[in-house]
Structure formats: structure tokens, C-alpha cells
Length: 428
Ligand code: PLP
Image (cartoon, rainbow, N blue to C red; front, side, top):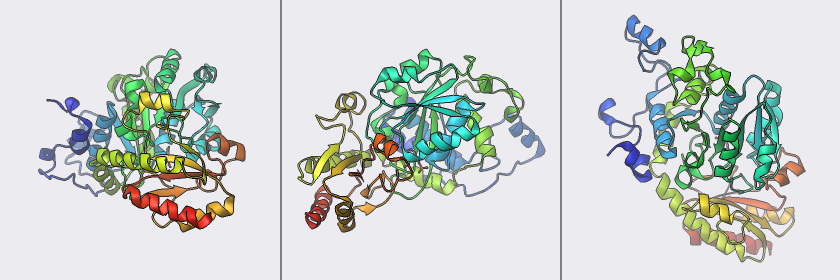
């Protein structure tokens, strides 16, 4: 049986690691080192001319981080992955790698605020423009946002905090009809609930800080490629021109199945430098080992909490795709058969003072601008994570003034419901 035949649960504890290559260490060792000895000058020559694979400087590659990269690639069904210092670094490197030299990106407007700000304020100053897709449910609007200069479509598989689901298959088809890749931020779903590559996505990015790491202990990001996109189709000369970072050779020709992440490694990770520390790679690997069991349990608890909130008199609405009346229900049935995730929003009936009282009276939920932790979290996106956006953009992203976002962890469902209940009672 080859690694490709193993199920998710096996891959999450085994993929990408061969103990015999690491002194038979049972646990993945932390290679806490800046540099690796070249050995001798001949070997240095072989490493730098790409005749031999090996490590020489942790900013570019590290054996602990390599295990993380291989494991995530296996869990997402990609040919390769690259790990970087944060989810935002993963998104930034992905976008500049695909659209450098003044390209455009067609992006869904309901994005995590960091990504929205990157598109809206930062990338344009570096010559990369965004064309917003206002309504991700209107599939034709993706086609309309594409111009001859568009280099990719970018969207979240589950929007944060809009909790809208992307019709990946339909959007990938439009991207491919236009010879451009579909890039999906799969953070909220996690590789356990959804593999966008299966449905035609070409690049998948994650904030591994969230469900993948799963314990709120380390910031990290990963980029995965499908290995199927044709970077030699004429729209992406950066992949086929002679490249200083690979000895003046053609990167797509040398690495046809891993050109996207290889190019990021040798250029952007190497020279912009947002490298993940080996210790953080280790923490994320530890998290991955229990990804399936954690997310499965958290989804069950989430469903119980959603049921409780849906009937509560102080709640005006609940946005969770598994709910029959949710706009995303049909898409959830297609893309999220193992559950609609552990993050959702609900509308609080009451003014800002009541919302503040409710949050301040919670004892178990942590008041934190994060998601995907093993501890349950609450935040009001409009005043925290999405506070820098205009009111219109906030509402567009689902960060309505009354919206509270919950991220459900591993506590007992009854205890979480009791906590919400006592906090509601204090503001009734
Ligand atoms: N993508 C999504 C969907 C997110 O929710 C976040 C952070 O909340 C990020 C990317 C950025 O990740 P990081 O905080 O690891 O930089």
C-alpha cells in the first residue's frame, strides 16, 4: 500500500516522515538550527546547482518544516506545499507569485479582513490590482470580473465571517476557461472537512494558525499546489523565463509538478524572508496529528450550540450552512459532507451595551480575535477583526453590527450552552 492509498486519519500522523532518515526518532525532531553544514566544497556546488537536494539555511528550507509541508500536501491532495510564518504571508506570497508585474486578481469581496486590506490597500501600491466579485453566489459575476490581465481568482471556501460557501467546481471551470488558476483560502473548512483541489482548485492556502495547528499556540501559513495547472500557457512568463534563483534555468521545465511553491521558496521565501521557525512547524505538526478527531468532535458540539441558539429569544438569526433554511445549505451538502465547520455567526438582539454585557459575562468562551482553537472563542467582528473596514465593506463581509462570531472548541457542549445561557440571562 502506498502513502496515496492511506486515509486522512493515517496521513495526519504519518505522512511526510520517515524515522529512518532521522535517527529513528519516533516523534518528528525539531531541527532548531539556522544553518546546515555544507560538508565539503563539492557538496556545496551540488546543492547550489540543484544537483543534490539538501538543507543549508532555515529561511529557505528546514527538515522539521519539510515534514509539515509534505504532511499538508498529502492531506490536501497536492503535489507540494510550502510553509511560511503566517497565513497572511502565505496569501501575500501566493498573490505576488501569480500576479507580479502588474497583474489583476478577481477576488470575492467577503474575505477575512487581513486579506481584504491586502487587496484593497497594499497590493495596488505594488502594481497588483483587484477586481471585486460582489456576489459570490452569482457565478457569472466571476466571469465578468476577468479581464485579459487577470492572473487568478481568489476566494475563501467558507467566508470569514460571512460563512458563505464557494461553489468551487463552478468557479474553477470559469478560471480554467480563461487559462488562470483558482486560489482557495481553505482555513475555515480545514483539510479534514474539504479538499478544494478535488473540485478543481489549483492553489490552496491556509492560516495553519487555526484548525490545522488547533491549539492557539503558533502562527503559521501554508500554500499547497495541485500540480495540474499549466504555467506554460503564455500568461505566466515568470514561470518559464530564465530565472536567477534556479541557476538561470526555466523553473516550470525543471519542476513541472511543483513550480508554484518552488518559485516561492527560491524567490519570495528566500528574499522576502517570512520563514516559519522550526519550533512552530513542530507545534503545527503536533496539532495535525489530531486534526480529524478534533474537528469531528467540534463539529458535533457546534451543531448542538447552533440548535440552542436558533431557538433563543435573544438571537435574531444564526448563519450556519447545515441549517435547512441557510442560503448555503445546498452547497454545504455538496462540499461539506462531514460538517459545516466549527465557526459561525449569530445576530444578537440588543444594542451595543447589551452585546458588551453579554460578552463580558461569558466565563468559558475566551474573548479572542482568533478561530480554530481547542478552546471556544467569541468575538464581535464589526468592532474587532473587521474594525478597520468601512461600514459598507463590513456588512458585505457579514460583519454586521449585531453579529457575534463563535469558534467552537473541545469543551463539553452542555458547559458551553450553560455559559451562553447564564450570559444571556444577565442581559435579559
Ligand atoms: N485567512 C483566513 C480565512 C483567516 O481567518 C486568517 C486569520 O484570521 C488568515 C487568513 C490570516 O492568518 P494568520 O493570522 O495566520 O496570518
